Structure formats: C-alpha cells, structure tokens
Length: 154
Image (cartoon, rainbow, N blue to C red; front, side, top):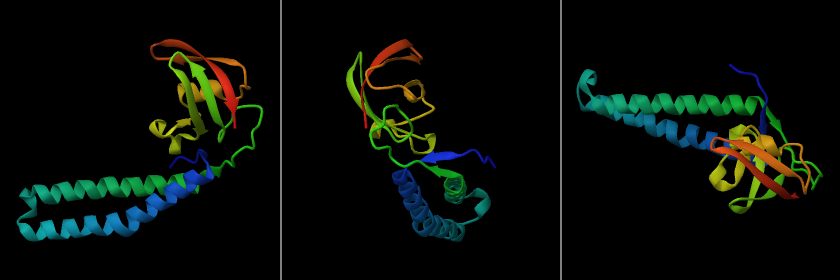
C-alpha cells in the first residue's frame, strides 16, 4: 500500500473518522444481513440480489480500507493563523472571470469543490500554493490559461 503522506486538516480527520465509524458500525452489518437474507431466497448461483449485495460489500470494504490507510498516513495540517502565503489549510478569496470565489486549500483526501474545499494538487490549488495576497496567479485550466487575483488569505 502507498505510504505517501495524506494531508488532512483536523476537520478532515474528524470527517474520515466519522465516516469510518458509520461504515463499520452501520453499513457493514446492514450489508452482511442483506447477503444473509439473499442467500435464503434461492440458489445463489442465479441470485441477482446476492450478487448485488456481494458487490456492495466489496465496495464497502474497499472504502473502509482506503479510509484506514488515509488515517494511518495522515499528516495533520493545523489551520494557519492568517499567514502571508497560501498553504494547505489556508482559506483564500480569489477574483477571476467568474467573480470572487472562496476556497479552503486541503489535501486531496478531503477535497470537495462543491463544499469550497479544493485540493492542493488541483490546477487552481497547486497554482495558488506559495503565493501572497495581491498577486496574480495563472491557472493552466483544461480550457486554457485563466488568471486570478489573490484577494485574501486566512
């Protein structure tokens, strides 16, 4: 398994621990019961419900293993108090073609762009890393270069 550090904020650690607890204490028993019940229905060689339940179990166990590995390799990044440069944990306001946008820069394991958390490895996140308030940053987006002004860093 990969031993690359997984950068997480304290909130990211909490979210992963909560998800892991939910998967182990609620989802795993539910899926096990579903497998058990589908075996009772009929011959398992031609049982779509059984196959579907086994597939769900495989996905669930994979997710549990992924979270456990992420937590094992976690490097917790405390929130910077302001700071003059963008780094993991910084909340930034940028101004670009679509107006102002606010993001928190996080490690890839907890990125959720719709929730305002972008990865330090994403095009925008990696372009912002190390820059200071007031600087222009050009992002090499799939549709072509886009320039943003770094309005603030928290």
